[in-house]
Length: 171
Ligand code: FEO
Image (tube, rainbow, N blue to C red; front, side):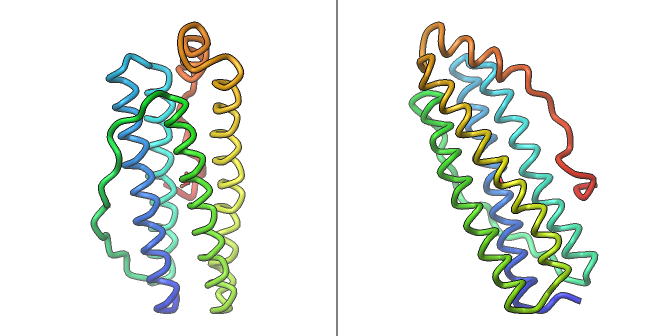
């Protein structure tokens, strides 16, 4: 059984993951509106992955007798100057999420909640990947240029990303 403090912290993280999903959906829509199909595809997949992150936390909270309370999702930006600005915002956002996961883990340590610590290890690893992915795309765009042929090539590459659930824990 989860303690009250842990349940509250997990519910906050569920909301943060849904906010991330909403942010990436917004980026996908903005990219599509500007004709960047590959970027739109990449963020549409990111949108799904963030929902999976929320679902993993929901499944876990319920499995340990905690109550999941869905709270409102705050507004997100709807327009970015270009894909490079989107990926820079993505990286900054993911760094914040990493800090939130670290904070959640610290609560689990303080509460001596070992199962939650174990589950959060999945998120700690996932955050390394999330930051790395955004940084790699920023590097590519900075190398080849974020307009004209450079953007065309990166957009094409991002269009080949396909979705697969990040973990069976989301089922
Ligand atoms: Fe759910 Fe992008 O971290």
